[in-house]
Length: 111
Image (tube, rainbow, N blue to C red; front, side):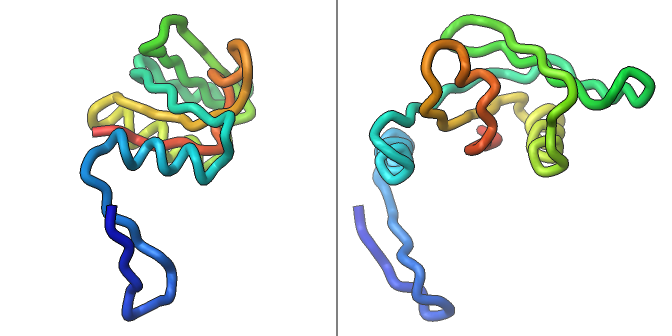
């Protein structure tokens, strides 16, 4: 891992030798209880009459989550991008049990 200072700004940039090293570093920075969870978006819907947006995700760890409403504009854009490309999604969460399936604070599209 190598750290670099950008000439345009003074933020740290770090290079990693693998995606696993990057994921571990991101989880460490977020907090000790954070873990990555990955899945595939299988359905997207926009139901104005029924109250809003809907996303269905099949998680790699097992389980299916379908959520309607309470999806922010920013989250919706990430869900749409994932659905239109690889379908793959990752979240970083510290929630226990099955609560992590609805924790979209750290949300990423995967290639």
